[in-house]
Image: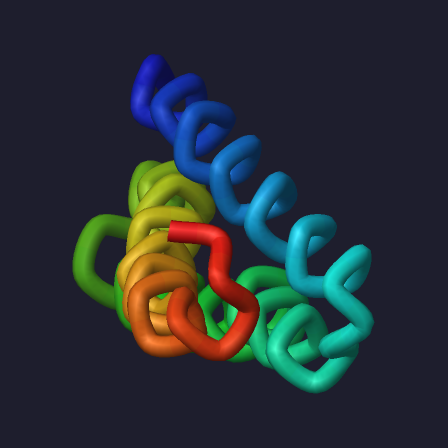
Length: 87
């Protein structure tokens, strides 16, 4: 069950970037990050991993969803860096 602990690192980065886009007055990008993290990837990975590994797959699904959201977050962070002039 130590797999779930890795999700906190990814989740904190995702939350920070989502809050950053909200403070930059772009709720659409923040909403995309939140939707991926809170709904899309979690449901997809729970369904996939629970069929593959049973109950253990449910525990692996949450950090995997946070890691997949981190990829989306990183892409959006790099894509909009010139628009908002933060990097």
